[in-house]
Image 1 (tube, rainbow, N blue to C red):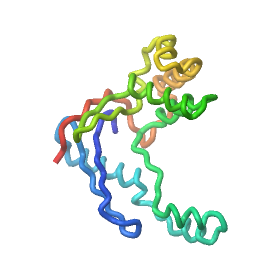
Image 2: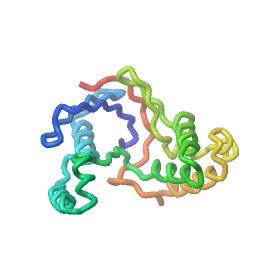
Image 3: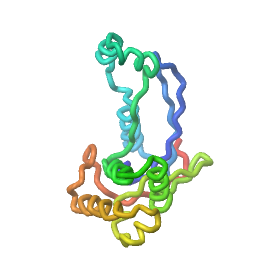
Image 4: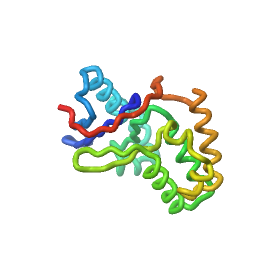
Length: 186
C-alpha cells in the first residue's frame, strides 16, 4: 500500500447479517494516525463493507438461477488490497495457454523468486513482485527460472508500460520502494 508492505491478520467476530472484522496490523514502524486511517479505508473498500447490496439481493432472490447462488454464498465478496492492476496483468499473462496446474507452478515461482517476502505474526508470506523488482531482469533468465517461455517477453512489455507511467493505478497511488514489515502496530 503506497509502496509499504503491510501485514494484516483479519478475524471475523460477527455473522453474515451483522458482520464484524477485527484487523491486527504489522508494519516495520509504528504507523501514524493518517496511515491507520488509510489502512482502515482500504480495508472497508476492499472487503466491500461500504457496499449496499440490497438491490442486488432483491433481484437475485427472484432469479431462477441466482436464487441458489444467493442462498449458498450470501455475504461473499471479492477482495483485493492492491493499488495497481499490475499483479492482475502478470497473472493473466501466466494463465495464457497453460493448464491450471502449470499456471499455478509459474505463478508460485514468480511470487517466491521475485516477490517481496514479509515475516509477521509467526508467518512468512510473499507478495506479487513489484514492477521495480522485475524491471531489470534479463528476459532469458526470467523465462528459464520460472519456465514461463514467451510470457517473459509479454511481461517485459507490461513492465515497460508501467515504467513509462502508462499503466493504470488504482486510487492514484504512486510507485515507491517497499519496506519490509516486521513489527506489530498497536
